[in-house]
Length: 163
Image: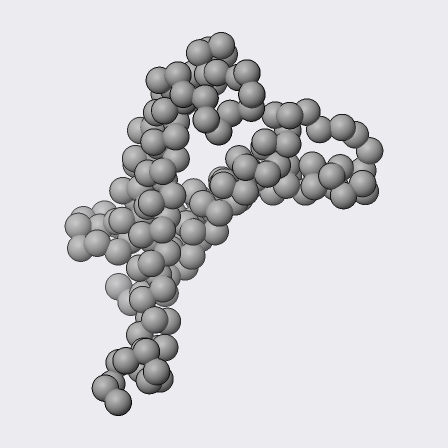
């Protein structure tokens, strides 16, 4: 057997060593995908929106989409800065603080809705969910939660690396 092959213990340790890199790339991809979705919606696209809803019908949603695109691009660059050599241009504590902040914001954005609306769906709390609230529960909030987990994993990996 060749050292480092998939059936050797070395491959497992290599995978454990590389997980922060994969988490950062996944966080970058998450942010870029979100930027594309917001750009698509800002340009009038309707896929991923509840039936009959367009961003052009709501100036506040349009403003959110226009602001979200550059924020998502910055988020993608943040994720990459945790693993690419050019990230060393920035103070380590600043990158770590930014990554953990993004993680917290995304998770704190999603968890209340996931719990509250999930309780309604489970019949443990009374109420009816609108179509938009169902979209939020099953599409939007899991997306935010996933992003939070990815940024948290990337931040944890970055924080554990030696300076």
